[in-house]
Amino acid sequence: MSPTARRTALFLLATIYAFGFIDRVLIALVAEQLKADFGVSDFEIGLLGGTAFAVINALASIPIAAMAGRYSRKWITTWALAVASAFTALCALSTGFWHLLLLRLGMAGGSAGTEAPAHAMISDMYEAGKRSGALSVLMLGIPIASIVGSTLGGSIAQVYGWRATFVTVGLLGLAVALVAMLVVREPSSSREEVEPQLPANPISVLLVLLRDPTLRHLLIGVCIIGLATFGVNTFLPAFFSRNFGLDAGEAGLAFGLLTGIGSFVGTILGGYGAQWLAQRDPRWLVAFPGVGAIIGAPVYFLGLVQDDLVLAFPIMLLGACFTFMIMGPAIAAIHNVLGTRRRAMGSAIFLLMLNFVGQGFGPPLAGFISDIASASLFAGADFAAQCVGAAAQVENSPCALASARGLQISIISFVGLYIWSGLHLVWGGRKRGKASAA
Image (cartoon, rainbow, N blue to C red):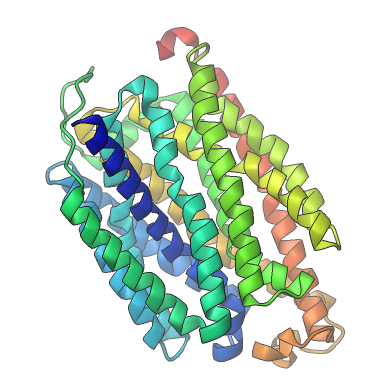
C-alpha cells in the first residue's frame, strides 16, 4: 500500500470511527428533550444511551471479528456504518421509549462492525513501532465527533428538535460509508508476523490475553475506565443544562468541546507519549495512561464542584485530557501479542469487555444514582411522580434544583473510578519486565 493510499485509508477509517462515536452519544445530546417528550427518568436515559446499545454491540462484535479474519475488512467496516446510519435516521420515527429502544438495538449492531475490523486494518498498515501512534490517529475520530458532531447535533436539536438530529447524522453517515466503499483499499497482511497464522477462535485469543499478567490488569483497568467514561459522558450535556442553565445547543457545544479537546489531547499524549516511553522501557506502554487516569480524577472532581461555568469548564477539561489516554496504547499492547488474522478478534474481545461493562452498566447506574440522589434531596413527598418529564426542567423549581444536585453527585462518584482503573494499569505495567516485552 502506497503512503498516499495508507493516509487516505487512515483518514476515512477515522471518519467512520467518528460516526460510530456520534451514534453512541446522540442520546446524551437530546436527553433533556427526550425526558420532556417521553416522560422518562435518568435511569431510562441511561438504558437508551448505554445498555440498549452496549449489549447488542458487544454480542455482534465477536461474529463480526470472526468474519474480519476471513473476509474483506474494508467491506465489513463500510457496510456496518451504512447499517448503523440507516437505523440512526429511523430513530426519528420513534413514538416512545420502547420504539426508540428497539431502533437503538439495530444501530448498535451496525456500529459493532466499525471498530475491530478497522483496528486490524491499521495494525496491518503500520509496523509495531508505529502502531500505537497510528491507532491513536484512528481514535482521533472521537474528538472530531465530539467537537463537530456534538455542536452540530445540539444546535439542530435546539432549533429543529431531536428528531432532526437523528436524521441529519444518519444521512451524513450513509454518505461517508459510500465514499469509503469507493476509495479505501484493503491492506495486505503484516510482514512482521512472529507466530503461525492461527484461526481467530475467540476462546484461544481470550486465553492468550488472560495468560499475560500485564494484559489481565489492562483489561480490568480499561473496563473500569469505560464504566467511568460512559457513565459521565452520557449525562454531561444534562449536567451543563441543569447546573448552569444552558440550552440544548449550548450544552452540546460545551460537551463537544470538553470531550473533543480532552480526547484529542489525551489520545495524542497517551498514544505518542506511551510509544516514546515504551521504546525506552516497555512497561510504560500500559503504565503511562494509568498515571494519567490517577492524575485526571481529582482535577475533574475539582471542576465539577465549581458554581461558575467559566471556572468549572477549564478545570474539567484539564482533567479530561488525562483520562482519555488509554485507547491507543491498550489496543497496541493487545495487537503486539497477536498475529494478523487474530487482531480483529483481539480488538473485538477488548471492545466487548469495554462496551458491555462500561456502556452497558455505566449509564444506567449513573442514571439510577442520579434518580436516587435527586429523590433524597427533593423536599416533596414523591420526586418520581411530581418531577416527571418537563416538570424537572422548570428553572429554580424544587424539582430542578434536586435534579441538578443529584446528577452532580452521580457524576462525581463515577469520576472517582478513574483512580481505581489507573492503579490497575500502573500495576499491569510493572508486570511487564523489559526482557519479556522485548
